[in-house]
Amino acid sequence: MIVIDENAVITHMPLGTRLFGYTPEQLFGMNALDLVHPDDLDFAATEMIRAVTEPDYVATNAMRIRHVDGHWVPIELMASSHFDDPGDQRCGHERARPHRT
Image 1 (cartoon, rainbow, N blue to C red):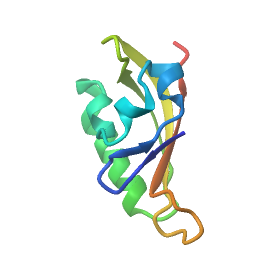
Image 2: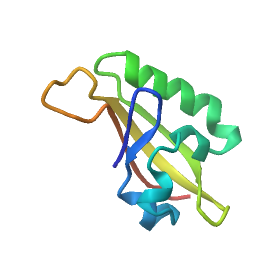
Image 3: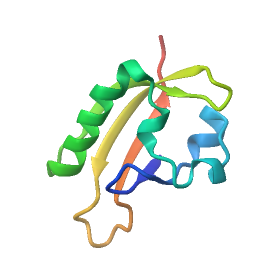
């Protein structure tokens, strides 16, 4: 799970170490879109905006995320907004898993 705020800033990413090699300290405060492969960025940004602004929309896509050592990790991602859920302190969240090619 990746938790971001309304500006796509990472506030929590427990998978960051296992999948991408980053420590929590490296990821905290980073813009999630800065990790997305340039060829996937437009689509990822569009889907993120839709997930945040359209109630009940769940963005689902495959993209590549930069590993701490510089190589690209293909993932499948589902994103949805929790901004309107008063019982949920997360702003937005994404679930990522390695993409099988």
